[in-house]
Length: 318
Image 1 (cartoon, rainbow, N blue to C red):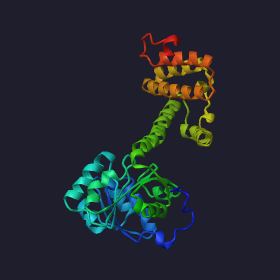
Image 2: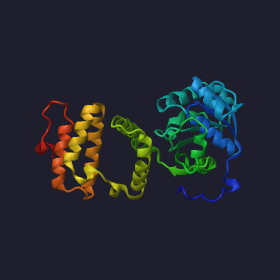
Image 3: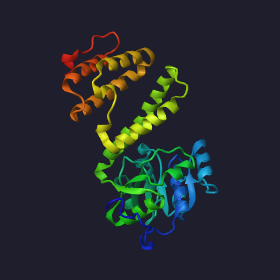
Image 4: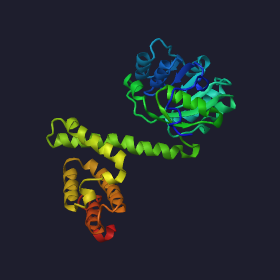
C-alpha cells in the first residue's frame, strides 16, 4: 500500500477507536508520540521512566499522566508504546509476556527502526496485536517534536490484518506511513543512520574546524550552505556533487589532509573515507575523469597512512 493512499481525511470506519495510551520508556520519542496521539483524541493514562531526564520529559509532554512501573502501564493501557533502546527491546518484550503483563487484544507498538514485528512474537503469543511504527525523525525530547511529526515518514511493519490500524495511527500523529518488509528493517535503519546520525557528526566537526580557523559564527556560515547542499542532494542525487574531490583537485585534497593532521588529527580518517566514497560515486557518474582520479586516489591512499609512514603511492591505490 502506498503512503499517499490516504491524503484525504480518514473515513470513520478506518479510524482506530479512541484508546487509552501507555508509554514504556520515557525517552525522547515516547512522550512526543503519546502527546501527538492525545491531540488526535486518544488518552494517555500511564508512563514509565527511571532517570531524572525521563521524569522531566514525561511531566512536560504528558502533564498529569502518572509515572508507574512498566507492568502497570500495560495494565492501564489499550495501546502501549515500547520506546526503549533497540538492544533492550527483545528482553523487555519477553519479560512483559512471561510475567503476564500483556493482555489479549492489546495493541503493542514499538518504535525501533531496526526491528519489525517479529521481535514482538512473545506478546503476539500472549494475544497482543503487534505493530512496528518507527518515526524517521530526530527527537529533542521537547514539545517541538510533536510539531515535527507533521509530514514525518514512519517506517511501518504490521500483519496484513492490522495494516489499516497502523496506517490510521500514523496519520493521526501527522505522519506518512511507508511500508517496510520485515526482512528489510535492518537495511532501512542502516540507511537512516548513515544519513542522519553521521550528518550530525560531520556538521559538528565542520563547526569545530571553522572556529579553529577563526570563524565567529560557524552555524550562520554553514546554515545556508548545508541547506542548499541537502536540497540539491534530495532533488538531484549524485548530480549534486561539487567540491575538490568531484573535480579531481588532488592538490587541494592533499592540502586539506595536511591541515587536518595539524589541527584535528582525529578527523583525518573520516575525511579520507568520505572522500573515497565521493570519488567512487563521481567516477561512476562520469563527473570525475579517470586520469584525474588516479592522482586523487594516490593522495587519499597516502592520507590514510599514519603520519610519518610511507603510505601507498598512486600505483598501489588503483
